[in-house]
Amino acid sequence: MSGTRVKAQSRALVIIFGLLCLLLQSEEAHHGTEYVVGDDKGWDLYPEVCNWGKDKHFKAGDVLVFKYSNPLFSVAAVDAKGYQCCKSKGHLKKLYNSGDDHVVLKKGQNYFICNVIDYCGYGMRISVHAE
Image (cartoon, rainbow, N blue to C red):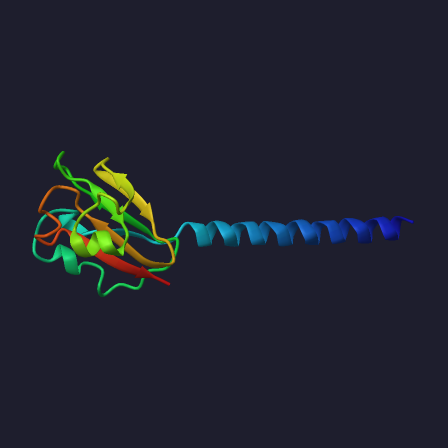
């Protein structure tokens, strides 16, 4: 009888270990790599910001960090039409304005614009694709 009990305990430990491994894998998948938008320059109005990320390979679950100190700036997550026409009104998915915004990428195309009038038109916008 004690041999059966040991086998049952061993099976239970194997199951618990397997569940822990699955939990750890799902946590890793949820928390991806963090990328600071604009690198050292942050989220600001400069010519290269719209090209930021073109050389990077993003995955769903990766985190974009928008850092900015200008209190007028914000980050608007918008749909494709909002990105094309540089307008958040009617196209807004979420508005961020903390100056240290962490945005988890969803699979597919992700669009972000500055919500200050005309700044998007001057290039303060990015579009990134996450696998």
